[in-house]
Amino acid sequence: MIIHPLKGQVLGTELLNGRDKVIVDFNYAYGFILIKVKLKNILPLNFIFDTGAEHVILFKKDIADILRFNYEKRINLIGSDLEREVFALISRNNGISINNCKPVKRDLIILEDDFLNLESMVGEPIDGILGSRFFRGLVIEIDYKKKQLILHNKDKFRLRQPKNYEKINVLVENHKPYFQGAITSSEGDSFSAKLLLDSGSALPFLLFLNTHSSLQLPENVIRGNLGRGLGGDLEGYLGKVKQLKLSDNLYFNNIVTSFQKTDSIATNTIKINRNGLIGNPILSRFHVILDLIDEVLYLKPDKNYNKAFKYDRSGLVLYAFGPGLNQYYVKDIIENSPADEAGF
Image (cartoon, rainbow, N blue to C red; front, side, top):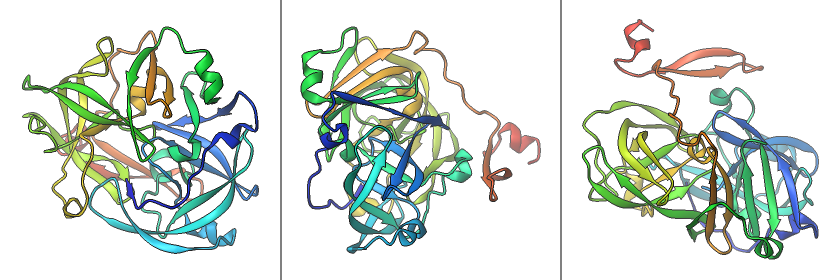
């Protein structure tokens, strides 16, 4: 997502309250890292830990109204669908606390309308995003197996560098990490692509079409719904690339890939600064340490990291609704899928 920058800087180190590290438990659901957050130390909420976003974003304005947040100004955002322009409000210096960390004051961006409605996809409440700037100044370790986020003091971390990890250089822009991945297309073309490390994405691997001369739609694709972004449903295609290479030793072959068009109205006014992203279904196959200060990513693969990915091949896109999110409806059907042929 693209957000107009805010003034001011936050370091993030105050979260540790003088400790070398703190451990924050999370829930991993539907490809999202969910952290319990309290606003003004009153209201417990579910936020997505999202290295693909910069700021703290609250999806539901009615929560901010109940807590009597003060709104400074209205801004416009471009969602991850790269099409719809949505509007939000800025609220300054609000109390935010997460487990085991010192409560801090942060600026919030509050959506005027919750276009994501992620509850319908995940089946439990999701109220906002904790962007990477929230943790600025810290080394972030993600242990998907134990479902823990470990926040490290940078100086202490430098004294004991991780061993037996693959070290990959990253580029940090607007507090978000990017790296150069090597891609071999289904047609056999090889090229280097700038990819966002996006812990806020439930998609394994997504490429933006036409952002590179070698990046074209494969011959065999399925058109359908890729997920949801700030602007609503993400429409695109599913196909395969022959290989995605993270480093000389870490790679995935014949990986199912999401392809999204970029020839939208919004891209006339914004510049897409990347060719794609990798999300949690890939990242969760590693023990991840992200050092945004020194711009380094450390990856230690699980023993089954290169195991074949599992995908829902039914063709059904199911959403939950109702007070308990225990009622369901068919939101979409992929053309020529088993669900389509079965007459849904």
